[in-house]
Amino acid sequence: MIRPFLALSVTALVAAGCAGAAPSAPPAGTASDQPKAGGTLTSAFRSDPFDWDPTTAGISIGNQHGWSTAHESLLSVKLGPDVDFNDTTLVPALAERWEISPDAKVYTFHLRKGAKFHDLAPVNGREVTSADVKWSYEYASRTGAHKDSKLGPAKFAQFFENLESIETPTPSTIVVKFGTSFSPFLSNAAEFSNPIMAKEVFDQDGSHKDKLIGAGPFYLDANASQKGSRWVFKKHPGYWDAPRPYLDEVRWLVLPDEATLAAAFTTKQVDVRPSGPESVAQAKAKYAGATVYDYVTPGGTMLYMNVRRAPLDDVRVRRALSLALDRDEFAKVMNDGKAGYAMAGAFTGYFTEAEMREVLKHDPEQAKKLLADAGYANGLNMEHFYPGNAFGEAYLNGMQVLQSQLKKVGINLTLRSFDLADYLSRTRGNTFDLTLRGLSTGIDVDSFLFGSFHPTSGRNYNGVNDARLTQLIEQQRQETDTAKRRELIRQASRHITDQALGLFAHGAVSYFAWQPYVKNFRPNAARSVAPFNATWLDK
Image 1: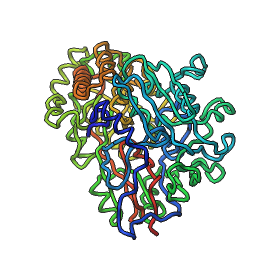
Image 2 (image 1 turned 135 degrees about the vertical axis):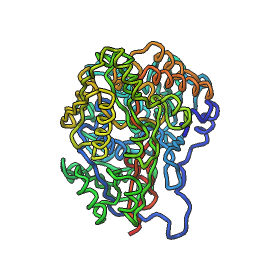
Image 3 (image 1 turned 90 degrees about the vertical axis):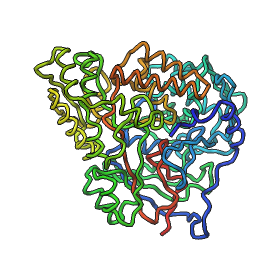
């Protein structure tokens, strides 16, 4: 589905922002469907969070849980049981309304009065002001007071490309100005990885790595939490969207073993669980009585390739890899035959299935020829890094499918396991050949396109630096016309595919399962981890 900015012109977005002064009401229902306050909801991590600072940690599943539970951004997305997974319609959050200049250079936000941070030292429940937004955005972009700091580059500085200034004419008004038109920014203001943070935490600790204090619906109870076992979040009494959250507490259990997680869910010790190694059909049979909600992710499972060095600096080798991939087999093994194809650089909906099949060919003989032309007629050895069982059994199955497919064209893949932290470090520089990774994207497609393929992006793990692609990426960011921007994105994705600068092994199908007494919950592409602020328990 097309993302918000591509579905609306700048004028329409301005109108939407001016009209959006009040939070949306919960879905209508009978008296028995009305929210009940109280209770503890239990979900699960597969691995521990390790860093609460979104500007330095990058997106890792455990970290995401905390950010999206405890933090709040200026905007959010519409959530609820009637909202489709890929519908990321923007709604007010800390900002109750906004305006955008026609050239998309100036964004003005108006904060709601009375929104408060968590009542934890050193912030102590004070009100959120425009000064907090300015500080957070300068911290996230390494500009202003942080321009010459020794913090290192921010993981999501791409949210603020060509930022010119941030003004705070009143305690509740923020004016963000860019040197060039910047179409993705409204969506960027709704990213859970772009929250409004409290300066006091940084002043005390020098970062936000070890303290999770935000203005979101739940606060982290550090005393009740235990690394490797559980993370406990309590209701934030000062949350702006009262009477939400309805839950008194959200508990995240750390359950890396799938058998243990499945048993905990079956016995109702876990109320909401993420996707497991089984197919959606198997999950629905296995968890009879529970809701099993499956969805196609905006991107897919990416085959990260280090194009900085041989052999992957040769386009013939990269094209051979693409031709070796049997995406239909991946879909059959991993996705119940669904979502076999996805285009790098674009979200679901930018290309039809027929268009993708036309360019994403499976041709092992042609792959062998390209490898021979590149000097590897007798075969090619490469390494695939993976983080043990940190990504679950489904990931390991996919890795083995990849190994089998590449072997058929003469590419011998050695599988090397590392602990998660070491794996993440090794796959973020010129230190690896290949690795499969689920793709974490934001609300706007620019989060994928710029984030993965622009040479200045901190998340360009492939090391791509292609002049034509860079030009297209920058042009789409500055284009305010919906149709023209969409076409530029399609051109960029085609170029990525032609040069095999990024490959999807397959489009990804995932699911969430939850118990029948969990109400008003559904994952969303922009908040797929923990959108529990409006969830309640009927028990």
